[in-house]
Amino acid sequence: MTEELPKDDDSERGIELWPLIERYCTDVDRELAARLEAWPPNFADIHVHEVIGGMLARQATLAQDVARAPALWTGHSAPILLRAMADAYINIAWLLLDPVERCRKFILFGLGQAKLELEHRRGQIGAREPTPEETAILEAGQRWIDGQRIGWLLDVDLGKWSSLSVRQMAEEAGCIDFYNYVYTPFSACAHSMWHHVARYNLVKCGNPLHRHHRRPVSKAATPDVHYLTLAAKYWRKTLDTFDRTYALTILGSSSYETLVDAVTDCVDPQPD
Image: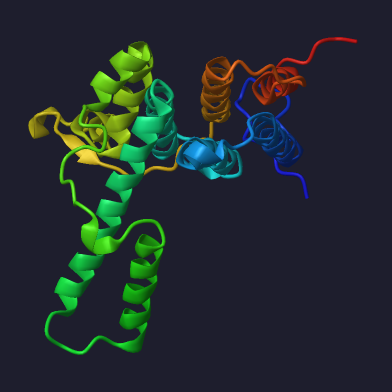
């Protein structure tokens, strides 16, 4: 079964989605595997490989999840995942400036948050006897923490893992424009801020007696493949920063360029 992107009134053909999507996701897997093969772990600082490698894999997953969910290619939902990709990119770019120390901080902060989550669960149970399911959850969580650090020795930091704001991290990492033009605008959708809600979920009433108030609406939006190309662009940007840091030269076509060429050819096919 082939699904097409909905057609505008002026278009004569849609985009056949699933072949394009699966090709893109396969290319992302290939690009991730190529980096991991070209960047073997240094076991003296294995935490760097775990954090940076894990963040690369996370970014690949987000790009593929955007690709495989055409219904989310709208201004209502796509910015939530794209903002997560922007957050991951800024984190990676900042981590790579001093990976040994910063990756250690990243891990310790995360373990502290996991410890805090367990304590909240224990507090919710209180003095009553936990159910078998609750006991299993608590024990599994504690084992996961203890497998990396002794839990009772962990500090719980209620601040920011980097001790900096995201803006400060972006400034240090040389990507303040990305923060200003991607992270911040998409945060409006992620946090349901007024300048997103007013544009997407309110319409002006036409009755002047009602003071042209805004009426709440929940309308389906037409998916826009532009959001897919943005996700692909941010994945490409992440790879470029990683490759530059470790002086890697990876052969092969770019998943981003291949996707853009395919979309362009579908929307505006060139004569043979």
